[in-house]
Amino acid sequence: MGLNKKSVDDINVAGKKVLCRCDFNVPLKEGKITDENRLVAALPTIKKLIADGGKVILCSHLGKPKGEPKPELSLAPVAKRLSELLGQEVKFAADNEVVGANAKAAVEAMKDGDVILLENTRYRKEETKNGEEFSKDLASLCDVFVNDAFGTAHRAHCSNVGVAQLVDTAVVGYLMQKEIDFLGNAVENPVRPFVAILGGAKVADKLNVIDNLLEKCDTLIIGGGMAYTFLKAQGNEIGTSLVDDSKVDYCKEMIAKAEKLGKKLLLPVDAVTIKEFPNPIDAPVETEICDSNAMPADRQGCDIGPKTQALFADAVKSAKTVVWNGPMGVFENPTLAEGTIAVAKALAETDATTIIGGGDSAAAVNTLGFGEKMSHISTGGGASLEFLEGKELPGVAAANDK
Image 1 (cartoon, rainbow, N blue to C red):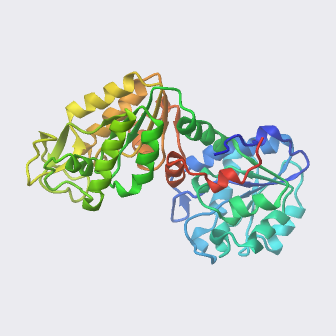
Image 2: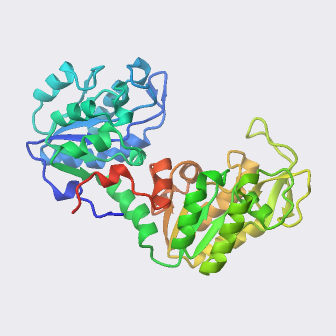
Image 3: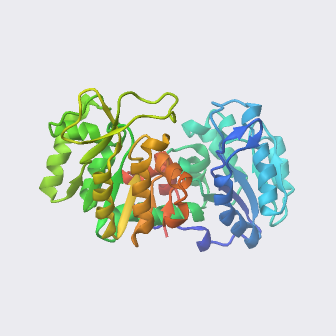
């Protein structure tokens, strides 16, 4: 996987029209942005392009309008909030065609250092199919393309891959660069010992990740709901815990593979069990701690127990690189969040480079207040998983190599 990409630091966009693909896919409630992390994360790249004296044309998708204009998924509120965050006007190019007459006129009128934001790229049905017509429209607006949207890097769409192939200069922004530096290089070229921690509910979601990381890491730790299929593969009674019976043989193969490669594969040695799943998810629950090889037939494991917390924390202590993807239990319930908190705490206390693959683990780390202590928290769930699988990401591959 070629990870040595040209970035915004390798070019100067003075006087040039720059199309910058950001990830402004923010949650909206009644037209108000409820979480602006993604906007804040995009600011360094945007500021660099403004400081260079480029004409900065921003674009992004928002939600799933499925190829037609949906007013409730317009990026207008994003332009307004970005104007406040940047301290200068971000002109919104309202245009159901995204690159229609209004957008083109707005771009023509730009001066160096101006910023405009195009309408939701998914208003165009070609976007998600990487259709040539929309890619050409986007390319017609600019001299240079900058991709700073890691959240969609695992998809080949017009606004991140199609357009990149039609312009002479296509580079990555600071956010993408950071993701490549941390996530990409952690997997391809880690400082050892390299410990990977996987959690989450389903083994099926992580098949390729488990397989790839076993080859790359020194220790693989497995928690969360997916651990019970592994425990069953070892012949343990797992009660009514989450299990994927069709993946028991796969888990046996992975246990054998770890042994053959001389890798440590750590599974939970005890579990926090409950009688029935909480409804609502954060309702109070009665728990009982059981050893993994002595679980009652009528209870289900919903978190790693104290012995496992200590075991996992100990494995992290001597690490130099740690990648974590997926919670250790039903962390949305305060009683069943202890395992996830313990892992977050262990990562916060180690001197290792700590990388959180997006999605639930990123949410957990931020919610629990450990965000500042991590070296890197990925902004993309699906994209970070594919990096951990060792796949080439189309959005990264499309940028010019150094």
